[in-house]
Image (cartoon, rainbow, N blue to C red):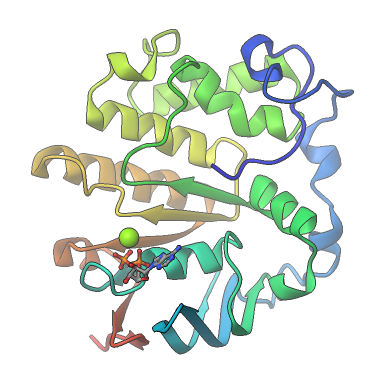
Length: 264
Ligand SMILES: Nc1ncnc2c1ncn2[C@@H]1O[C@H](COP(=O)(O)OP(=O)(O)O)[C@@H](O)[C@H]1O
Ligand SMILES: [Mg+2]
């Protein structure tokens, strides 16, 4: 996973991932280089302008242009291999387009260094993946605290936040357990808690219910949606499921490498 940056001191297992550094609060580091270049009111959350992406000879995205506003819930549908994950990785700055622009709150990701993009992901983006991607050697609570540690939040505050999030996601007694001791649905709820722990402006969810049974998938989906809505976070979700699309503010379809806005 692409978490980059130093953890706060005092995280026993977590601090083995990175060398320790003096603690700062999340609030103190929030006004960063990206925020200064952004107009918090008028800029769209995400904007793609004529984005092209190919792997070898295969054109995956052809002149994709789209705008996503703050707080929107946008679903991206398309058959397997159509480019949904690629689109999410481009939006999250995990990949760069061959041509065209990807902007986050008005700032062009292409104009940033890799270090700046990593900082943006660390502070402003939360990811939820199909296969949960929890760290097996960390407890559930430590997994949820990971983005807070990487943002150098004080340990006590991180513990308080992770406990509150686990309660909110109906996992109040799971903090000291390890991911493998939980069901798939429970693991994905932990992943949702981790994705929103640092209060990102944008949550990217790549087929988050693709590995769950139908009933569990419905519950996880509603929790993901309400957890993001409650925080005013923009949610962009890739999925196969057309039923999910009914709940979204907007639906984008990828077909033949083109991103189309569904009219409803
Ligand atoms: N890193 C990569 N290298 C080469 N081809 C890739 C890579 N990532 C994705 N692809 C190809 O790009 C196409 C779109 O992939 P992807 O975005 O994962 O689709 P989806 O998420 O809709 O299933 C697929 O044909 C896939 O094989
Ligand atoms: Mg995919």
